[in-house]
Length: 332
Ligand SMILES: [Mn+2]
Image 1 (tube, rainbow, N blue to C red):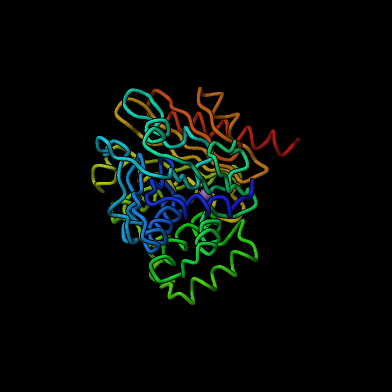
Image 2: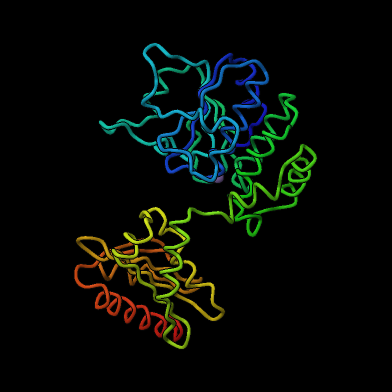
């Protein structure tokens, strides 16, 4: 479904556009949408960016981030010539309103034509014009191509947006990045990309409360099963005393896998009523079976489950099951 020219044509014809991001936005959907906003604004078009959830803190400094709107802010009679979803694999990925109606259907009523830019292989092509390339490492690379077709020159602000899109979807260029990715990176550098500042903001800096929570989790880290299984815990006191939020927990369980020789990692987190377990594995090891055995689920290398009972006892049960699974998978 490669069709950058058809998307560019729809944009050229439109005087106004609603650019849309997916729920739980990542750097690719936000960076791509804000780059389109800047580019189309430069062509004299009216552009609004919509997202069901708030822009992540690390991306708040991007030009236009402050103007990203929730779909619920649509005013009576507000209309756009073009609906332009970016990095959205399917229409339901725009999220739902309080009544359970897809935001896609709500905003679709307000727009004349539809065109999308995406890179998910599962995308069914839900717009009139679809530029979908599953080989592209980031939607941001396809956005840059469309901007190029429309004659929008790169500048520092657009470069910051596209860098956010491309670097986050390639794990800071550690996977999926191809030769074209680096050719575009060269163009972004020439356009004035402040690489060091942006890299620190996106990949190094974190909220102080989260840093202190990580310190607590790492202080609890133990390796068992010959160094193959990492086990960490976070108590309610750890959250209260650091001021950390549940959203800060996300990267911690992966840190258990950073030790050479580690194959699985477990983080147990105490909440008021239960113990939430996060399980991770390095392929080919898998943890989805263990999570399912405790009533949870997930993917082969990232899964979770919730247990009732005390933290230590619950951790012991799941860790024992993971150790048994390591033995089983090593024999297979
Ligand atoms: Mn993406």
